Image (cartoon, rainbow, N blue to C red):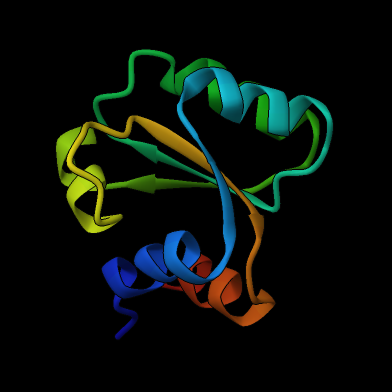
Length: 99
């Protein structure tokens, strides 16, 4: 069983991410995002999925709120979405397999 919380936390602590809607959209648009994580209560959920799909960037739908996602990332605030810029390919693959 894949521990999604552990993988998501490693993206933030060991990799490079762009947190927030505006930064995520920029990372998708310029093609630097490797994967996008979206909380289930993100207001722009469908728009993020469409934008990422157009650039062939995978989207992982986190089954929790933005507050939960912030907690998992070790941040004391709500995170509705973030783009992973640098991470190990195995972490990304394992997260997508666990879907």
